[in-house]
Image (cartoon, rainbow, N blue to C red; front, side, top):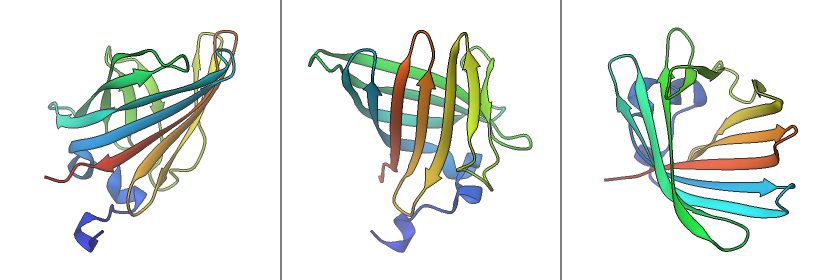
Length: 149
């Protein structure tokens, strides 16, 4: 890895200009209720949308049974003044302070409680989520690596 390929620190990474572009995304989901590990491999694209960035993820999700299918996810990222991640319909998912990316993020979805955090290294950044509730008992790790053109 060259210095030009290194990611900036968290405070500088979570800005529209630093996130914009293509990222390789992998997700590992440990599912206690299903009794196995699902994996996603694909791409995430952050593109300007006038108010911040639109996040579009697409890839192949492979279930613990080995069955695979296409998967997609969309979010809106806003940056006024701190980063906020919204669902595609504009509802708030979570907000965080990039100066403290490993601080716990909490989101209640029905009876399921999501607890997450971001981590940034020189080569990649990660989002880690623990979801516990009546419908879910999962731990997921999502890794993002810049796609170099």
